[in-house]
Length: 350
Length: 202
Image (cartoon, rainbow over all chains, first blue to last red):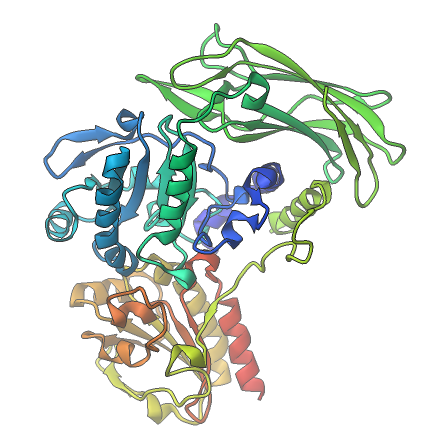
């Protein structure tokens, strides 16, 4: 067993698994989950952990061929195709010319194609980029692999000691607000160097743009579900792409912390367990937020019996990179049954 | 190993708590933990059932190994490259498999494909390597194992076999042949081990 596998803790994996079910509704289409659709077999799965679609793309600052540095966040305002490569990677090598075609084809739509080289020595990368990378591509060099490693969900390729290599050959679509909308790891079994599936997703997403203004109640959708194994209720916040809410321990006193309160007749309710925060960069500062699908677990002393009406009050403030909505308190009720093999959920919208 | 138990439990919780899927009720609840790209006759040759292409290459001690000279023994053949992170990740499993299978008369052989000398050296020196690592410096042997229809999008055909695994039976016939499956990577070589046991048992 590699040291990386040993680092996993059971609680984390269990929480990841919970996150998995939290996100399943977001990633399920009529045709089934994203990774069962043609060309998308490499889609990052919720149980792999962050970063995930719906979360902000981890920011990085890397130098390009001309020596100038570029921050990913500086490209906000337009769509970005982000691809990780290395000179020796035979998959990447077959793709690089098609990546150039994509950069040319989508330039009129304001899409930037960003290619990040992972851990090649500088002279090797410079020579490779000069020979193979189209000038329309923004080619950046991640000599240390730190940027690539920030795109390695912990549950993806757990046997890899060098986490930067996990992101190698990955392709992401990042929306104008800086949120990940598609995240594909390599899928050698269905290898398509021409990016057909990525182009189809990009076409679909561009057709949806500009993003319609969301009603406040759609910025954060709330669902409740029993978690009989852990004797808990999972409060799932589905946070819309491009938005974040402050974590339960915000980075500044003036920020509104996310708080949940659960009440249910004849249930002993424990203290809410909040997930680890996700960093969000505001200018030079990094703040503690929740993004994407977020699961807050509230332990309850649950015994088998009739369904109970459970009420959750959730207070939060949702923001994008540029503006915040008013702080709000939401109330969600659900009829939850415990102690059966197949808990029934009959949710009532408030 | 506690997490190995807890994780499926948590997943079971997930399955139980999820609303029933209105569409596609026949879809499997979860994919197997490991899957592989199995070489099929449709991909071309060689494929399981074919005689393995013969070759003669030198190992790290300068000793010449000829595949056909190992007839009478079951052979595990692993194509590797130092640059491939999947090769590196599977290496400890290959070493363990060698320890387990050597007393049963199985030869485990790695073929390092199309690498310059320093890459080959780094593969041998990087980790415990209780099996011969044959140097296929120009990738010709690797290429002889690439079915035309395998990973058709890959331009550099000799690298298609990197991190492929084969089991060759006592008659020199391929009994198991998988290509790298990055989306369902079997770092523990579970399928390979099962295939060796099946071949030994037959």
